[in-house]
Image (spheres, rainbow, N blue to C red):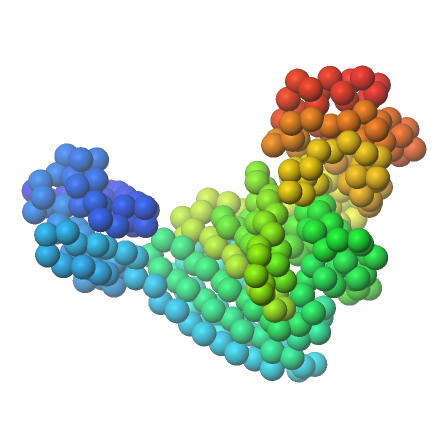
Length: 341
């Protein structure tokens, strides 16, 4: 049976999308999904192997398939002559020629922004880059051996705890060098890549538009900072669309809106009760016109916490519009209790 190009593309895309989660049963999954015989499904699996998109890890009765990764490694000395745009043009861009234009733009934005952070802020003398490309996705791993991003933000802002640094990153508009930087790079990169994570010291930050999280690791931790970013090749995202969601040049230079996952305040399960916790949360809110507070994962808040955010801050900053989303009944009632507008 000869299939049309559309069906062949659908078959190949199905295999590529599903093989990471089904390395041992991708054959039977493909047969079931498309109603194919075993020889026909095998034909397309073997075709992807011949094309270099898949590898067969284990032969025999129980084969194991995986996406074939092409890995590029680069190492640089950080000095005044190092230029992130030159690294992109010379070393990285040629490896991504088959990626769609929108994906290439996302990669260029995130890569050059994170490398520039190493050059300008990390105090590192070395930069290591791993670029991994397969038929499904593109992954960057950018590593320095400097002071560590969370420690540097803690020092610059005089914070008590390096975990508070992650909250400031999630807000956006933070930079230790406002003359040269707008503080937008990490904020937007975490919202345009499918996966965005930062590892430094004993802390890990997993940032995404719908799910920002902190993990504290035990043990030696990571020297310096490592940023990992992954984007699927079939991502429909347009970088301008994300920018437009948070920016409006008619309202404010840069971006005027931020979205804060309030659960980042809940270190090791502690409840959000005090005014001091609220004051940490609202730091730099006055730099925005719109602040969306996402209470997903927050079971309860105290009267003092709610009052400081939704009455005291709101009254002192009438130009900042606060919006609460994903509130359970307790959180919603407490916000109403303090008389939030």
